[in-house]
Amino acid sequence: NAGVTQTPKFQVLKTGQSMTLQCAQDMNHEYMSWYRQDPGMGLRLIHYSVGAGITDQGEVPNGYNVSRSTTEDFPLRLLSAAPSQTSVYFCASSYDRGRNSPLHFGNGTRLTVT
Amino acid sequence: GIQVEQSPPDLILQEGANSTLRCNFSDSVNNLQWFHQNPWGQLINLFYIPSGTKQNGRLSATTVATERYSLLYISSSQTTDSGVYFCAVRRAGANNLFFGTGTRLTVIP
Image 1 (cartoon, chains in turn purple, orange):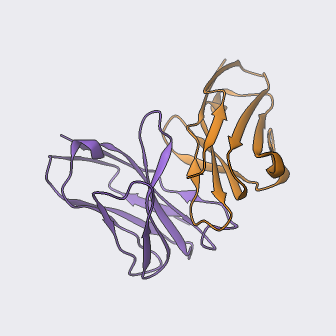
Image 2 (cartoon, each protein chain N blue to C red):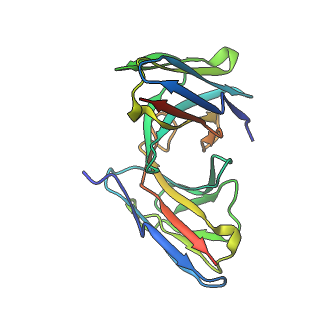
């Protein structure tokens, strides 16, 4: 059972480049989300989805896009990378829209924007 | 959004010692979870505990929702307990978990 799988593990971008961080889960979870982790700031929610075809913004959505075409996949797109987006990105999922079940995290993607 | 405060921010223990980590939150919640981030960066869910007490081996957690706090107890600490412990809460009616800034635990052999 793979759980939540994120790719790539590491990425270096130049300012202005675009890329997609991949996230897939094999637990049939309805709820999926993206967080970024910066030193001293805990984890902050970027975007989330409560089911296929439904997405919404979190605390820090600017500069990021998401889509949820299937239950399993929830990619995060950086449209034009900026140094402020240097961070560790975590994808997470939970069973029943997150209301009454534990949140499971992927292993993270460390992104550096130069 | 809801405020989540964790204390202490840093804790250094000798192996075998016990510790208590605290999480205070500013509003009514119907979902509270504790996570451990190990030194390799992996986030592991320890407890889903919106109220009451749960135990899992050397770890236990108690949430007193009416008083807006939760406690994580670690007994007989081991070096593998090192890392950052996060508390996260969801306000009733909201969709998302908000995280505290964590307690960094270092267990010395």
